[in-house]
Image 1 (cartoon, one colour):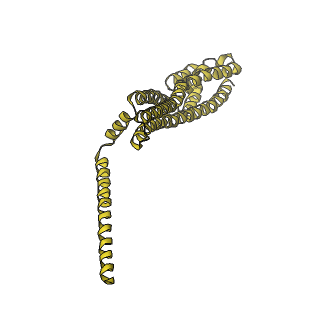
Image 2 (image 1 turned 90 degrees about the vertical axis):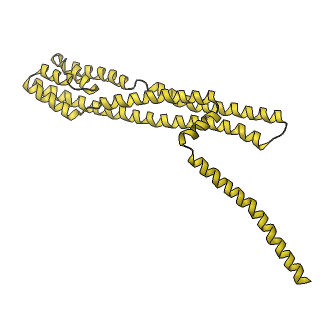
Image 3 (image 1 turned 135 degrees about the horizontal axis):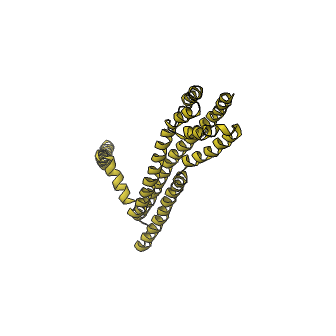
Length: 249
């Protein structure tokens, strides 16, 4: 009887374990199937779904901020890349022009060269007959003008960098308020109610932070590009003064 009872208990335990594993296996199979289906969905469809879940109003405002900031950043990057000048080649051409054709030929070399450095050189060479001090003042003054032109639009990018996360946080606060309103209306703290409101709130935050990070990276690249151009501009201006002093001798 003892062996019979032990055998019955062993069979019952195995049966209970099998019954417990079947729902777990079914749940695992369902989870794997859901993950497979989610992986089959294109990335743009997933982003579109998250965009709708986050709320059309706040997500659209964050998207507008991203488009405007990205457009200004791309325009600045293109402008700065086109403004980059081979200063060594330009200085060599000006020195040869002054030696062979004088002031007018040097001005022609500057006119045929694109970029702020050539524009500064043109202003300096055009006043070389008035003395070195006048040339230096002209170069410094026009260099400030060119630097202002290169920095144009950076204030707007800074504004968009600050605005995108703020819009995301505003959407987060409103999403939390909606979640608490839903809990109050339901009269019970249901996980589904809380999760829905929190999900909407966090999606707007993620959207704002992603936009801010992208624009911040582009902003830092633009600032570093401007700094490199300004340093090259200052070095080239000193070399230009030396060339003009030698030409007058």
